[in-house]
Image 1: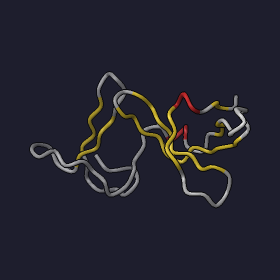
Image 2: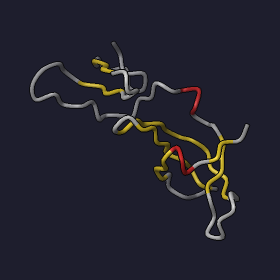
Image 3: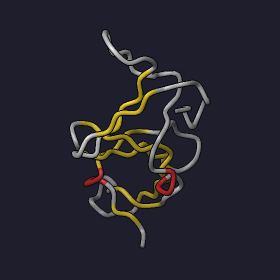
Length: 98
């Protein structure tokens, strides 16, 4: 299988909890593929939502730039406004539009 981002040969592992891990080679020491951040959720990239502002309102607009699953829980890397570096947020911390 080819990595969808860099097109290198990789091996994909997924389990019933929803986690996905990419490996460069199979077997010990099980090195993960870190050259890029492939995602199996391309339909979620560009998705827009809101996170809470300091005043508690859902007024800060965000855009999803990457998706990851850690310990069976989905998290999103989101771009906040313009000019800021993306940050990781838990799914529960984002209110998605639509």
